[in-house]
Image (cartoon, rainbow, N blue to C red; front, side, top):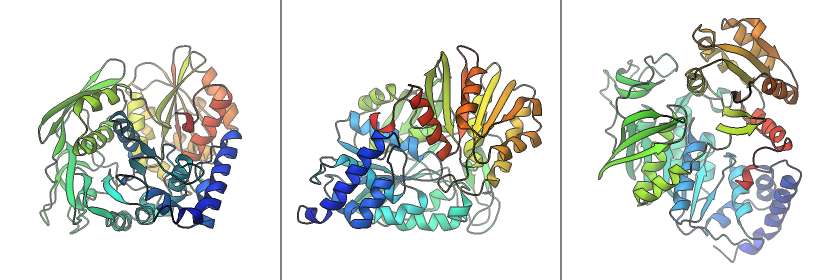
Length: 465
């Protein structure tokens, strides 16, 4: 296809690259608009650029964890000597994927890379996969999320499955065995499962999710163990479907000092032990998915361990900034399950908590924010959790404040301010020196706050990381 078709995309490629340069110069970021503009002139630009990848693409999709999983996998493969194209900003619609390829190409349209590690929005899987040579795909989990965009989970499962039809015949599909919906996917390619064995520290209830019954026969799942939400070791007493036996499974997990964990994975060839500097029980799923994929691709264990030692949280996913002798921690929230796991991680810490929440209802956030009422904010009202102050902002900041009131939190501890810059600085001033300020945000609020942090002279822009 290339270089014959290269001439066709040069005008649109030039437009996209100029848009990227202008956006970054103006501190806008430019993660989606360049791709959208370029594709409006040359609809085939993504296919033409991606066709030059020597080994094709690995797609990562699912409700939660895809950004961190893709980030980890891209780092591991880079450590292994592969040249990677990765949409590290988290822009996972087709426009964002296109922008990533434009950014990595030369002005003449040449791509010098081995693999694409591409995070893909669930609803965008068919469109993105149809334009790429798909070597492998990872599906992390499926939770109720942005129902105004996606609709019910069975519908999303079908959309994802359409995209998975594009996996090369000699490729593979890596599925989360602990998710009943994800593990139900059947494709005519090599399918490998990952999961977690019985571990302490997991949730004891399945009431955090709408997924309680088998989508095939309607019977309620029986669980031998629940990790969190509906993820665990399950079987259906009606149709007999049960959790597949994973080829890659975490068999031990111990918290260590300095917010790290010691983890052991049982693999087809033995046990792989490693340390992970990442907070939150859910992050061991992300690490497991990335490590399993890397091992399947033949990456050596010592290379994986070296990459994990350098791991730092990515773009708004428990990402930390040292600001004015304080630690600011950004945590993206977009659905009840993810928010609950972040909250659980925060309240496990000792001492008083100053917390900030910024909730927007723009398209990229999901315009329906009724999910906030399904989040267990009541855990913040528990007397053992020493909440000092909670600061709220965003286009739905007032509703967030109301939700906290109904959660039983003393209204004297809740403050709303429309201006994100003002509320952030006030939250920071109320955090003691040496302390931590956790901030829970929806996607567009996170982008806005990162601009504020960058203007203050802290942090890096995503294209500099």
